[in-house]
Length: 231
Image (cartoon, rainbow, N blue to C red; front, side):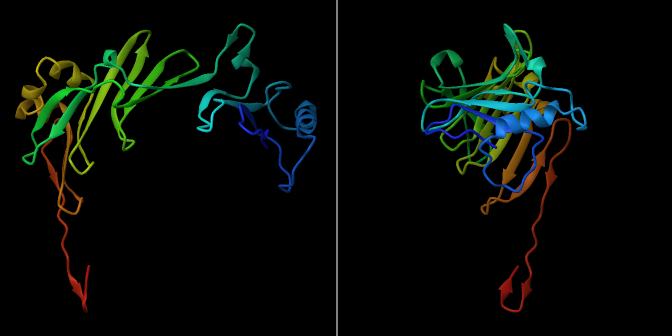
């Protein structure tokens, strides 16, 4: 079930109620009664037996908070939701902008200007954040995950002129390559040790993949004729 408003700000997802799909005007009391009945084989949770989401008050209707079922997430003065924040990037983010040449070399252009990317930040119940910088094609350019208080691991994603994924730079590669992007990202030994590399043909099919520590894997597509149809 769900609370309905013109611009909804909070919605609840009950985990235990089953009915014929008709609208239930008294769903709150019915659900509370179901969970308070000791005969039911459910978790003993008399208060917060549902997941609850909060939404921003705008036509975008984006999620801002999600509380999981259970009172453990709703302790007084110690609530622990999963929270969501959205903003444009700014110059302090310092997200590098890369391009892929026709010879599959990586060129560092500059850092993205303010407002060129959108930042989606998710903070878990323990207060650790994951941030994603997304471009206008909804492609993730950079992801930073907080593995300890204030300590972030960064992964970069590089796309070619057709929007196809060409390279993934995992955290340790990003740490080492930042000293000279142009050199390290095109150095054979560095690429072989650290990077995920992908190549595509003119039909946007994957024809080569290389994972860290390995030689490239090639993909070959063979066409054949059936009657007048080319497969």
